[in-house]
Image (cartoon, rainbow, N blue to C red):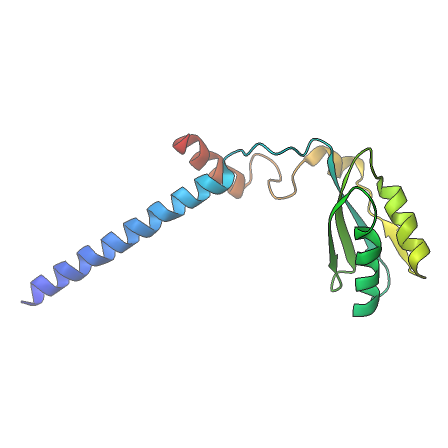
Amino acid sequence: MKKRIIIKSLLWTLGISATLFIVLIVHIYMVTKPVKYDNADLQLARIDFRQDLDSAQAVDVQHTVMAMPGIVNVFMNRHDRTLVYGYRQGKQTSEQVYQAVMRSGNYDAERFVLNEKQQSSGCPVMQGKTSFLYSISNGLHELLD
């Protein structure tokens, strides 16, 4: 009787583990498969604030930027004192957005500009083809493709 319970428990454990593993593999595949977006002219930019902003100032900055033509999305991180926004090239520039933010209030801020090393490294999540995360995601993608 005890042997039967142990075998049943073991089979249930293996079955649930296998199911969860398959769900994980399918999820990773779905998240990493290439998706065609019409983002050829979409650009991300960031403004770093040297001062703490209260919630009213943060909302004011977000509204100022979001009201500009060509702005797609705006995210203000008060904790890190950064404003990240997406804009359409040709309709807007990061310099114009920065100037609008500076005109909207008395802020101590600067545009975030990548240096040469950062520009050449590519995606910050996949820092080089030797990283563990890159190896796992690339291997699973090749396996399931």
